[in-house]
Length: 425
Ligand code: ADP
Ligand code: MG
Image 1 (cartoon, rainbow, N blue to C red):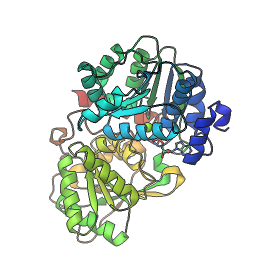
Image 2: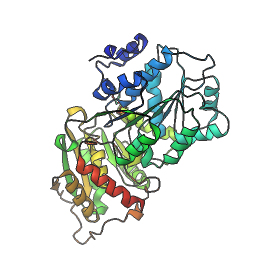
Image 3: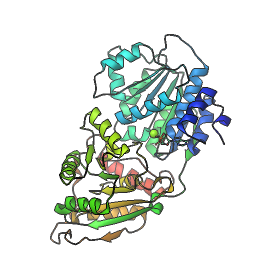
Image 4: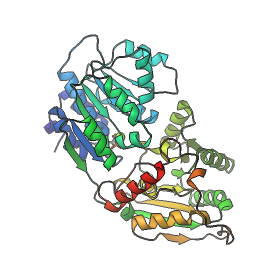
């Protein structure tokens, strides 16, 4: 199987070659042909499997092979849930369209709208957008979706988790009825299927499931520790292990900030990435982490969603997530592409219930270690932290969708829907 045999045009093949891709990934091989044929498509595959090219390449092919209007109305719209994802998709669009006469733009909130509006005014064929800014500019009469021929809902599961259903419905009303619709998602839940029914017409459904579940490739370990000693322990583990690229999950934004400061004063370069950070700060943190300038990236679940972070040797749960499935999503950040990874969780007494839930979900118990000087507090309460104490709750809680075993694991899906309904109450 080659990109050429999928029927993509020469300029696109050239750009792919320059990206260094040799063969289409399984989800690309499955999704690209029906998209090129003009079908509506529902595609699901775990994070990191190349879904972006799965819709971008055939979209570029279609638009460039069927030029329409020299004034360039928006002909293709890609909706993504977060600014980072929008920026990432846009980067991909730009790279793959390098040798095509195609113009594209990206819009998201949190930054001045003026440059975005100016860009759109010049005419763009493809617009990548987050829902809020899109609806905002549309209602100001600064852009029109009346000529959209192709609509892509990327990271659809995260869209739902983040409460964008209403916005998606509003966006759909702004586009012509006759259009091609594509939906890409990391997971394949009942809610996703429901959304698919309302957006897609006679969709072709494609799915690529990973062979191994996270649990098989990733070495997992729990450190039982007193709550107040977690910071000391994490600093010790990172310094003594001389770990260079570590992703740390905290439950709250506040916790992420606090931990980042403590790391910095211990001489470990760290940055936090979460919803309260400015766009500039987030982009900088991510770039610094990818380039190796920043050793530790501290993230909340929502901020980490779908981010294209390369294979990570170490993922640490500074706190366990209160939704068991999030654990699997988080540790899926390590051990990618068959390489080995280590997932460590610092667990205090009040997280015992969460740990039990996680072990039940993954079907095994996780090795426990206690480090001298960082022992658990024997008098601490084992009462779970109440979900109400979770500052991240708000829009969609702290769910994440970076699953390695999504789709393939029935028990995890069951668990997810149970947790979801609980969250809604
Ligand atoms: P997803 O949306 O499924 O999470 P992305 O589209 O972000 O995945 O792709 C993940 C990574 O894989 C990116 O760095 C991308 O450049 C790379 N990639 C995509 N397709 C291929 C391919 N055919 N061969 C090699 N690498 C690829
Ligand atoms: Mg993606």
